[in-house]
Image (cartoon, rainbow, N blue to C red; front, top):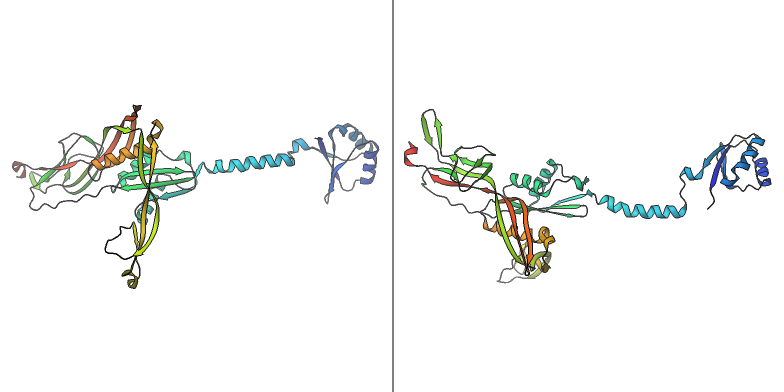
Length: 368
């Protein structure tokens, strides 16, 4: 490929004379065009010494531009650059979070959690590398939303999906004519929060307590006088538990898939819909319509890399079902994973946040 030098001259120059002289010394001219003030053409780099002699003889004002330094890209190079840019754009865009989707049980909670995420600087159009760790986000959300026991995060491309899971419901018994009580710790831990109805705190937040320590006093002291009020409420504390697990190397997992709209005749046997569609009253006698949740079974061969996607959710489900209501799993740490004799064995530490307050009757002598 020929290396060209672009020449710029004032439009008033005698172009006819100039080109005659150039042709007479065998200088080939390329890419000739003009503007209001200048005209342009290009010559081969090897002809530059001869061109300079012609310019000096005609005493012409000349401005030269090296085409290589000018940064002109040839057609084939444009194609290559275009392909590279085309391939790089998705890679660059994937470094950002463009969509945050909250999948809770109600639109109101979606808005609340979205605002909580914004408070910890998680929002659309941010670099994915700037997102805090899942454990840090989970702890902040769960400590503010006691109705959830776990928050699951899924990042797919530039989309972050946040799925909070409700804690098991607890039926509280109403005890009439119950004796006055303190609230004491049923186990050791670090106190994180109080939700009191009655009583006076015996300790402060972020303080370690042991099993049997009084958390909330069931009396109020006014000078030398002690007024029995009893204590009622919840005291949350965090503590670590270690869980050992053993699973077959091949497991089958049934998980929800798509939701299907079902339209059928009304029958005595009530169909359990995931979401029922309310029909006009004249049609309710004959038809029932709703969405059903379908499921699919997948078989997986477990290995050490399965910990994140498979084993952790299984262990979470096991431990959350065994713990009381209002329990949250704030963090987990894998201690060990081994595969022996078609079994996957390991140990995991869980940071649990739970209501550790249990009642203790105030002795008769203390009620005075």
